Image (cartoon, rainbow, N blue to C red; front, top):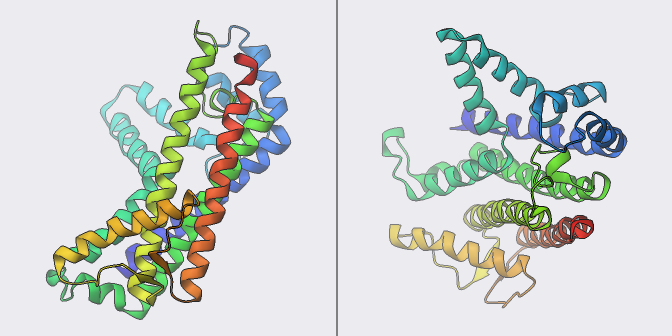
Length: 295
């Protein structure tokens, strides 16, 4: 298990570096990318090969797979077009790799779900219980670092969305290769896409921070109040729900006070949730601000 979380920690930081590089790319090359696509695709359709050309032309070929993992996506498409069985199998395996390890919401939610599962699942086949695993010093350190790294990723994604909407104006079209602007209902389609982004990222932020609260409570007694003790199994299943409740009330600035930080670790976790709540509000405003010209 320690090896698994070590690998996940490395993958998360590779993804963090990719997001940071994407933010810098949008800031420096975003306008050039928009102008290139508007000239190359005057009918406003989406042609991914043209997008990949623009990414490469405008210095988007950074570590590990470039803007939107375009080098990996292009390799997958090449293998699919090859026609032989081995190429199709390779394309299938690379698609799984890309979608599970380099899709932000899949990677982060899967890691937090694993932590929840370890806590409520009997690990007797490994000679320990979930609680004992979470209590070993090495596993505690690795899980804590992994969760902190996920919080960093959440903040970077919020920054990327804000910068993307401000500089690219149509973040869904020019960065994610989703283009509703040629339809008769362009404004409503753009708003629906923006709402989809809000729900996916907002849901991920809620779930991952609930995992952070959950682990901090178990490992460091970081929260007090109406939280249930971590045993028996029935109570264990209820604790994640209470962590979701605390995270949601903190993100939305409600803060009833029935659950509260009990030490400095709990305070730091809560500060992280509040900062992400501010970021969430900022990128919601940025998304709807970017659709103003289409209304």
